[in-house]
Amino acid sequence: MQRLLKLEEAAMFCLGIYWFTQLYYAWWVFPLLLLLPDASMIGYLLGNKVGAFLYNLFHHKGVALLVWIIGVYFKLEVLQLIGLILWSHSCMDRLFGYGLKYPQGFAFTHLGKIGKEK
Image (cartoon, rainbow, N blue to C red; front, side):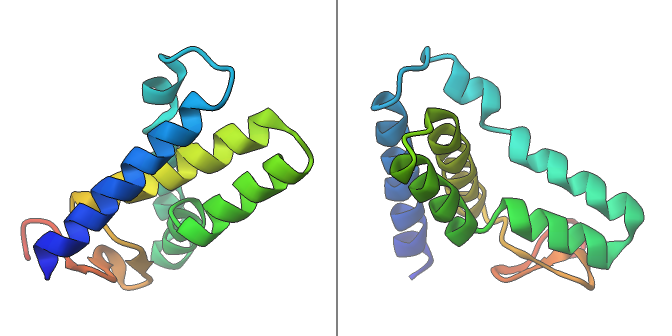
């Protein structure tokens, strides 16, 4: 089952790349922005609860799709770009085993515990 879930995340990541090709940005913008959602980890400086909230906000596929759909509806390509970067990054993270965070700490995710103490 784990392999199937990773295959699904890889397919959704490819969908994000395809969506990007439908926009009018240079190809290098995608890899440049792909890791930007990880800046949300700075919230952990304010504690686990705030950190988990901010991290999950920027790594939730529903939020990513909402931003993208608003961009499509209002024909705002920058919102479409933000949405697909959030989407693609979330897919990539889950492909590597990083899930949404619980308030207990960064290592506690909906996909299981991560890190050295796993």
